Image (cartoon, rainbow, N blue to C red; front, side):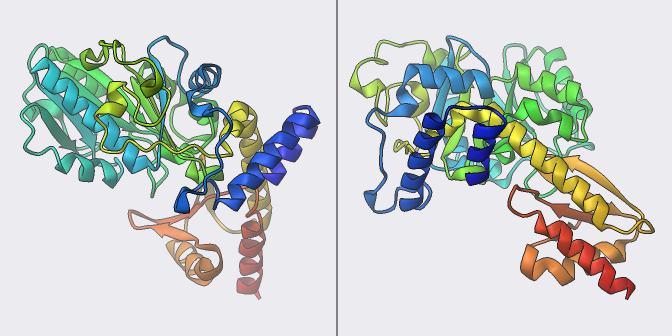
Amino acid sequence: LDQFIDYLNVACRVPAETTELLSRMRQGALMNSAGGTSGGRLQMTLACLCKEPAFVERVTETFFRASPTSRLELFPSTTKSVEAFVSLLAREAETRERPIKLLLPSDAHYAWSKVCEAYDRHPYLRTVPLDVGDGSLGATRLRPGDTLVAIFTLANTVSGRATEPDWFAQQLGAAAAAGADVKVFVDAALSGCCVARDSLGHRAESPQAVSAILDSSIGLVQSTFKDYGLSSMLFLDDAWLECCQDLEGDRGLAAKVAGGSHALIRYAPVTSIPESPTLPFLLFAREYTRFRLESFDAFAAKLRAAIPPGVAYELRPLFPLLHVDFADEAVAADLARDLVATYSLITIDAEPTVLRLWPTPTNHDVADAIGEWFRRRRG
């Protein structure tokens, strides 16, 4: 965050009094273990910022989309966000007394299947697991009027890859042809505090196809712990949800504090919604995204300079991850083995030639270590 504050001052010309305020809020976060709630020592803003309409509208428009029916809620973790969303689907299915089927591709984070296990006996909510690439919705019974909510993973936690867009579109098309009402929810947890659609140019998948999925989604989750210790952000467009249409109770104090009266909170297993002193940094999310992308490009350039010309490899950007795909599997294995203790480099079981890196503004020394490793190997 020190580097990002300097970036705001120099590259973005943000007034010094603004960045000074952000720095003071950051110090509050550091004193409370980066915004954690342990011991009840969380330093709150004078007004609960995550309930301020102007703040919520700005952040929702930046990460998701501007709409009278779009909401932002903070949860303690991504798993809790998933729990809240699935609980809301269960409530919606009960309200309609009609099936809602949750399509879980095999690349979805394991938290989804763990959360859905609790609803195995639910009369209306059903989970449909499907293998990416091989699976087909053909065996799934869908009738006109059924609702299918499909989970699209923007970046898998292990591989960094998105759900294969063409395959995903085929499944949605098959469901729509059967008469189902198809919805998409995007799991962009790995994007952290970066704006997902602004970073698609730094990913190997088709940016147009993924952008279309983001634009059509009814919800989005991002885990801001990945960047500077915030909570998990859950965005939702509730226009299609019958259980969210009754807003009579969405007034007064109950709507302004944790445990608000909106259905997303009312029926969630967790009602304690934390606020972090670093929450105001979200107002500069687009600037932060540019900052991270510039740092990502600088790391990639440094890595290219570190790897000798005679080594066959390919750099595959999957922001926020970077894959180094070596032609020789032994190079990837030896490199990971020798540097894992210091730099936590890992290979991927399904792709043994790939070294997975997570470039951040503070770990560019990994490229130096890789260059030194090759020099020792040649010597």
